[in-house]
Image (cartoon, rainbow, N blue to C red; front, side, top):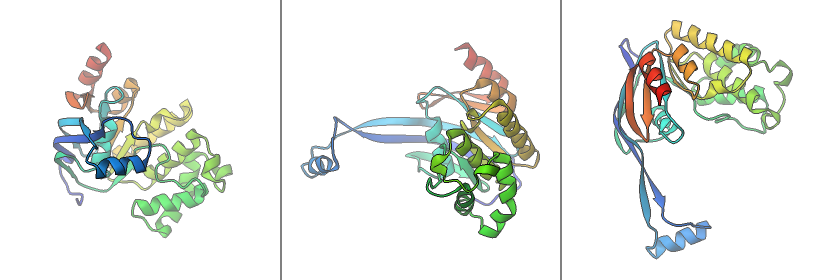
Length: 247
């Protein structure tokens, strides 16, 4: 949806997500098709999310916390439009830059230079626009000496820096970051924090997932705690973090 002057930029209403998991081990696609044709293919239901509701205020940093398997990544993918929920509704007002998985959207055979333009196109920006940002992106990601190197030779930290540099340089209305700040040294993490604070000051809203509760406490104003796909707590970040640390 088009961005408007409003209190909330993301509205999640009673969202649920069900996956059908096949019963028993299937060793090949051929076996899958045979069992499907013989009507011997059975599924177990797995609910990754159950009746999740919350709002993200415009110009804020909103945190998501919970153990592995709580449903955080699934929820982010639904908000980003990668998945459609089984039930409920998500309304997003503005353009989104998603950093959901390390290196997602990159072509390993291409250089950092080519991937900047490739990712920019995926975010809806033409080559001329990305050319204006190119030097800033490479400088921020600290990849001056490696900008023509294929990404398959990059470390995980280098890939993360490039992805973060691209997503934050295009100044989206909404940035979705899944554990992206967990990669890199202390100096780079500090630089990322300053970039996030500058984006928020300019009106960008950020949805942040981190297993480091201190980072959620320092950057966010509100948070949602997911447990086994359900909302356990939702409210001011200090209350959520205090309760989460007591568990």
